[in-house]
Image (cartoon, rainbow, N blue to C red; front, side, top):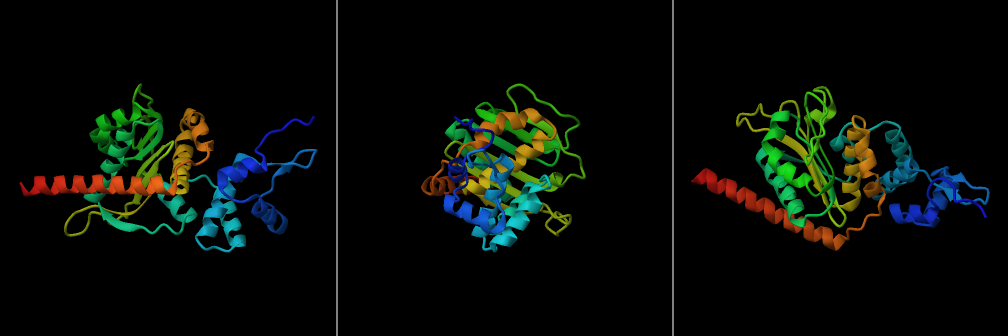
Length: 287
């Protein structure tokens, strides 16, 4: 009897990517993609990078790209490790439309996402980009609480050194010239829910007459988008601390289980929490 060999069978790939078996075979026959290796029996085996490329191609097809273009773009992006959550999501999910958001709104939405994650008390993956260490220190008590129930918790900022404090997020230093150091990012993925928020701060942010910082932001509860954000964040963290990738592997390889209905309820819950935060801020300012 033939050993199963390394890699995933086509049925597993179908379950993890949502791309039908017939579609995968047609892509391979017409475009040479994907390119699984074959066992002596002729059965296909797919590597993890190949599965990631299939996901990327599927997302680009859903956004309206022709299949050959989607394959070329996915291969090009896959050959270079992502260094920016915002840029990678924009490239891989061109249907996501950014909005200019002022810092108080980013704070309100971030706190709403964190509150929802705390309320669910699930085992989750959690990533946050704070740009500056002082911004993270202001939020540190809340993030310590979030990390208590997290499988993986990582924060990025201009920390002086890599730290993995007990019962707290891993602190990954990001050099000032790194693309992530101009980004605000929050990625939270549990077994049955997921949210991500990321924004890029243009160089002229804060130079307006009102002095208010602004971000080109996108946020999503789409399971595929959240998983993509988790993978990107994990890869950036693992470059400095490989144990992060090892700890997240099982979750990142698990099939997406959140339903469209559950994610719609999640979006409604987060929106309500965000409005509550904004209302509280306005009330405090008026008082």
